[in-house]
Length: 206
Image (cartoon, rainbow, N blue to C red; front, side, top):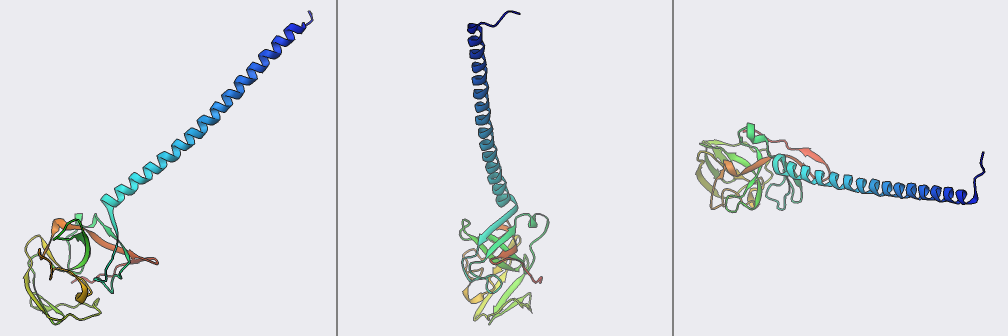
């Protein structure tokens, strides 16, 4: 067998070094590709999370902070409330429901109140007592009385008469320029309130 010359050894060593260099470059490219793929995957996850969150908040729920005391003591100022946008797709609004809706006098403002009157109802308020179709309405959720005489109100078709639970500190149907809330203005039914934890509403049906 012929001996390998020094020149051949040098050529072989050079080829081996070039091969090793190519392998190292390929490995580095693989690492860069892996890092780039991981970054892309994280960006994709974040985008999907934002899209899903937007879809849920736009189509499924409404999540808002209550800034005033108009619904105390059922809902305290500063409480956060989650409402279902889907509930009234299959159900009709009922007396006693606490709902979130577009303020009739300025639809850009979100309000939360209790439905007191539904289409066809006749309502009068005398010294804290709501008379619904001639009968006194039982309202165990109230903690304060209401002064004065209000009404009469006749709720038209497709509309609702709204009151806050804190009657002496609530801008509701009694004061609105557009007295009644239209069905189209309802955003959702209030389902949960939370501050230190979840609490399902105990809503009286009248």
